Image 1 (cartoon, rainbow, N blue to C red):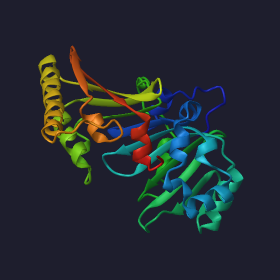
Image 2: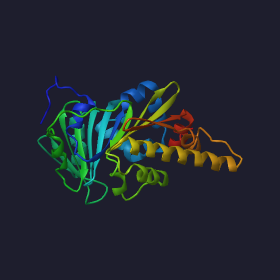
Image 3: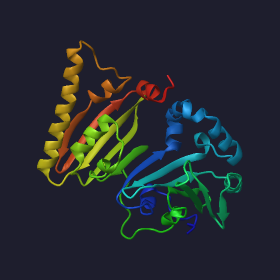
Length: 281
């Protein structure tokens, strides 16, 4: 199962190891670190929790410094699957598992998660690449040991992106109100991609929805444009202005157009919004 050091670690190559029919999320922590956005995340309350500080102390692993990028898959069938690239102290990780009443056999380690029916399993695919699963199956990480047949899928651009079949979000039990509305709009699309990349001192969010035909793409563009205008009108009726530091500034800044069967969308995201979202302002 271990890859040779000469094997490429591109996101596209790793996508072939993830379960099919999944929500897939990619985060480039090295790029976030380089551009200063990761420092905003480091000030969030979750990163200050005692349990996390204990984990860092015992395992000598801190995502702020040691994680370069991660691919996460959430398949329709359930569970969470990760491929993480970074710097790992595998001996310390094994010691942590054993200290938490877990077990390591050869290179595969297992321990109980936050509830008795959830199991965490992980193993190295190479020294700087960890495969990990959180599932009812205590050996679920083995699913990441092989490569699915077929050519490697193309990976979207951006230092954060997610991609999924349009029908997938409605199968999740809990979604925020805005996400539920969006899920209804794109539910018939074969593929949806949302990516984020630096744009000067702010972020740019880009949407691509691959539709079944050009008319469907045009209809989606009309729906999203109309929804955006409704939000603008609602704010104006209250004699207010969109605030770039909260969701009103995001919703009202969306611009949409089509290119053949593709619907394309764009939103500028100010750093103040990220700070407010993370509670680090």
